Amino acid sequence: MNRRDFINRSLLTLGFLTFGSLIKDTTMAYDMNGITDKTQKKMKRIIIIDGGPRRNMNTTQMLQKFAEGAQSAGNYIEVRTIRLYDIDYKCCMSCMACKLKGRVSNVCRYKDDLTQILEDISQADGLVLGSPIYFGEVTGQMRAFMERLSFPWLSYNDYSMTAPKRMPVVLIETMNGLPERNNSNGFGSMEYCITAALGQPQHIVAYNTCQVKDYSRYELAGFSEEAKHQWRDAHWEEDLQKAFDAGRKMASSKEE
Ligand SMILES: Cc1cc2nc3c(=O)[nH]c(=O)nc-3n(C[C@H](O)[C@H](O)[C@H](O)COP(=O)(O)O)c2cc1C
Image 1 (cartoon, helix red, strand yellow):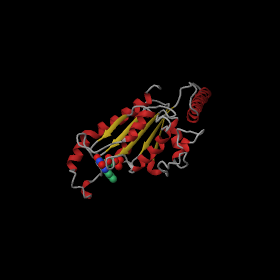
Image 2: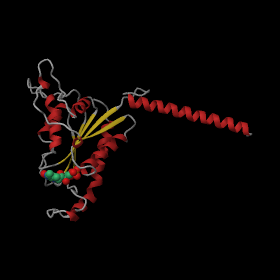
Image 3: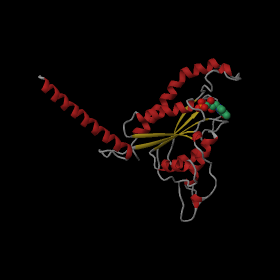
């Protein structure tokens, strides 16, 4: 090959590569901005609600694994995580705006940081709620969130529970308790609302979590650090795998 052929071929190859990357970029931009891409495949939207205050601890790690599992199912999955402790919102304020005659709404209209999130959940394709167990229940932030989510579903005319859209739901709890000895009431009475309005949820529980990284720094004599670490070595990877598998399953599920 002489020098001119070499230059021509190089330019041609460069042209193909540039054109190729342009096509790819256009498709990507279209994916990001719209619901469908050129193949008209629908984007699946999953919303994860993290009801724990601590970043990078047990609950958040479980939820991150769930997100990884969902994303591993393909390119058409949008997973969004909302950390309740990072936003500013109230519990149900009993404003009754959702029950006004002629303006009944099954999405909460009270204006704060939750308003748009609740609207987005109403149109999502899957919902995940994760919380540590505090005094036998989910955290106060999670409870407040669930009041705002559920009260507009409830009709005081016939006591039915109706969400704008049914969707798969996964409930994740982490706690100190053991499978055979725990005080968790989990999502409690709110679970009834979720089941009635969205569908039967799947449960994942991580028991006997390590509450701190270094037990020797705290007054925690009620726990054996050795037993905690033994349990963690035996179960934590399995717990994370359950979260990953649930994410993949939710993202892969066919719509009802
Ligand atoms: C205020 C508070 C109350 C708790 N109450 C319980 C409880 O009732 N039952 C239980 O099993 N664990 C209880 N725990 C332990 C946490 O549920 C457990 O460590 C959890 O995995 C922490 O999640 P995180 O690591 O994501 O913060 C409590 C922890 C705190 C801080």
